[in-house]
Length: 329
Ligand code: PBG
Image 1: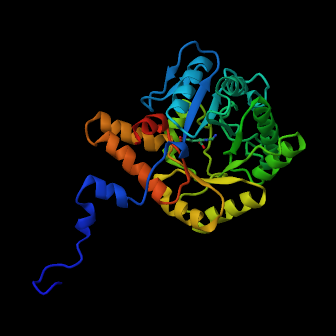
Image 2: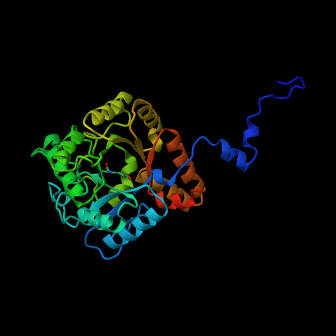
Image 3: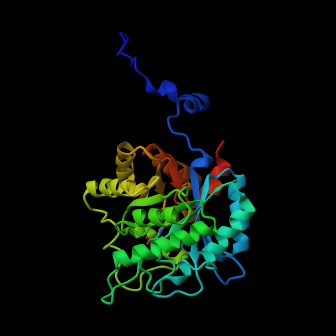
């Protein structure tokens, strides 16, 4: 207090005007750190809306190309592609078919966009398997870790061959980064980086994605391979460490908003770029509340992204990437 009894310290001084707030802002978003997840569906002639994700579609290859160009023009840093094949089977054959929908889309985008934007691919099997699990199954119906690694290696190779510039394994199998790294290195792709979904939780926030990628498991859930939301915090750090030991170039925490504590701890523990995935349920909640007039959509979007950045994300995967990139100064 001053002699007159007034506060000497007045934090409000630095909040008084737009320019002063802008000058002292500690967290700034940049379009280049945003990554847009995109879905491409085989055998459709028009983009298909995703009911639980208003504004998100399953693209045709053609509409994908247009939307990818729009993202690149807005300055978005990267795209991550998910394929939705016309035919699924037990081993996810479409995932490493050189003519599979994702491989077609990758080739098309690379030819069209060149180096205008980083083109990444989600490397997993759930979009391609008829049972919807992220791996192949044993006769007893368990997800077979080591047999799945062979499939991931083959899927990653098909994606790299088609032009994927970053391989992003999301299946949470033990050893997946090492298996993929070895396969890439052995086939002439030693320079293709791996962005590992390292700390990925068995989250109810993925619900709408399973409509978008048509990959809800037919039986059971993903709790035997994805992390328990209530699991030990050290588990996330261990997953990250293992992935780095296996050759991951960057790591990811997923979902984002409900796991900001994990994101911060991972950021503090590693010296590689850390990504956070603002997932489908995070998107759907905001869109639904905004559609009801219950929240200010644009402000909630920016506030949530700032929070994710402040918690330590170097890159943010968000379905709002293009819109936000256009809005940023
Ligand atoms: C698995 C994968 C999922 C997501 C990204 N990769 C689904 C899952 O693990 O069930 C979810 C993304 C989102 O919810 O936005 N290939």
